[in-house]
Every structure is written in C-alpha cells, then in structure tokens.
Length: 302
Image (cartoon, rainbow, N blue to C red; front, side):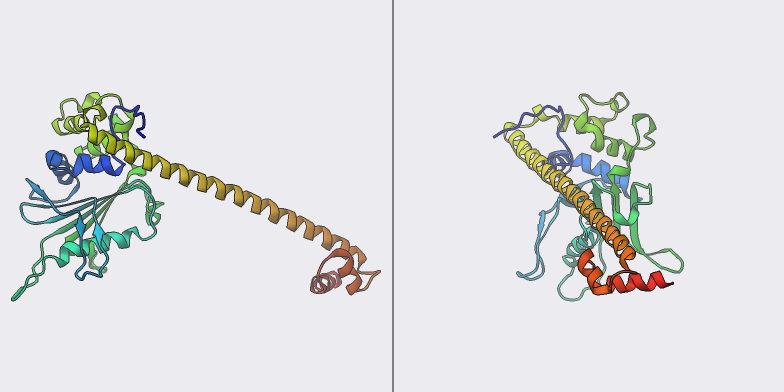
C-alpha cells in the first residue's frame, strides 16, 4: 500500500533518500562535493568509484559489514559514509570495526612492505553522542595521536562524526559550503523550494533537483514510500515505548511514594506505642518488622 507523500523533497535521513543523494553513480558529484567540504585534505577528490556495499570477513564464518556508502578516489583512498538515525551503544566500536575491512583488504601476497592507503570514516548522526553531550560542536574529528604531545601519530585513519541535532544554524548564519550541505540535509524535507541564497550554487541546486519526489521514476517513488513508511512505523513504535516507559516510571514513583508514606505512618504509630506495649505486639499491630521496632526504640532512647 502506497503512502501519500505531501513533501516536495524526499527525506535524506531515510535509507533510500541518503543513498539516492550520495550513493548513486549518477549523483556522485554530490558526494564528492560533500567529502571535499568536510575532509581536511590538500589534494581534493576528483573522482570516486563506488564499491560493493557488502564487505565479507576474512573467513566465511566472519561477520559481514554492510556499509551505506563505500567508495575510493583516484588515489585509492577509502571512504565509508554511514547514516545512523538512532542511538547505538557501541557506535564508535562499530565505526572502528567497519574501517578494519578496507584496511585488511589492502594486504598483498608475497613481499609487501605494509604501506596502506588512507581510510576515512564519516558518521552522519541523527542524535548526540553520549560522550559529547556537554559539547556544542556538531563536528568531531578523531585520529590516533601522541598522548603527550597531542600531535597526530597516524594520519591515514580518520573519523568524522557529525551530530546533526547540534547543527542549528539558519540560512543567514551559514558560513561555508559544508554548512550549506548540512542545512540542506537538515531542512530539505520541510521546504517547498530551494532557498534563495542557494539559487546560484550548482551542486546544492542539483541536490534539490535530485531529491524532488515527483521527479523520481515510478519504481523509485514506490521504494521511497516503503522506506519512509518503515521509518515512520519505527518512530511510532519508539515513541510509544518511551511513553509507556514514562507512564510505568510514574506509576512506580507513585507506588514508591505510597509505600514510603505508609511506612512513615506505621513508624509514627509504633513510636506512640513503645511505652505501653512490647515489641512483638507493636510489630503485630503495625505490620512493621521486629527489627524496625527495635531500631525505632534505640533511636527513641537517644
């Protein structure tokens, strides 16, 4: 069953939308522009070749890695670009694990000096990383470094994490082309036309044209509708789970409060009976334990 799509442009935070913009041969200029804007590289990327998105382990029993976008440039440098919509406890571990595949596949038979090509991992996150919750920077760059000098130790393995919720700039505040891209990714699904300031930007303009839902082939429109439905269903499930957890937490809190209030009332009654009844009878009358009564009696003596 198809959904009615009200928005003019597809959502780039769906699997289909992300790969349609950045993961197709026809639109590879968009990914090249985004990577050149993001990465700190002197020799800009001229061309890329998309690789098989499913990387097998070294042995048939090894776990597979399935990338959103995996490509190499003309110098055989490797780029993994991942879209992550929901929080994952071990996402950093996963990103390190993923980079192990393009590293291992560079091994050569026979006499090999272990020289490696560069590997870049780009994580576009629709959530804030727990480790960075008190940091307002939307972009984090990670490399191996000397812990004493803080200088890079190995520059051929680099991780970029973009926390999209922290990117809150409006159109007038954008200061570079990377921010043009991030603004486009954040807002395109809620716009009905390309912003005026982007009109003369060829690549951003191309991204808007590519993302127009009605311009998609019918088969691709159906694929997007199915993907969007799955995302909305997942969101509804998660929202319901959070609401239920909140309600259960509230119920538990009320229950705990009632139990504490009941306990205080029991102790108050027991305190008034200390001088007239023995411990066993007070415990029987109030429902408190003998240990509770003895503790109360000891405090009362002080």
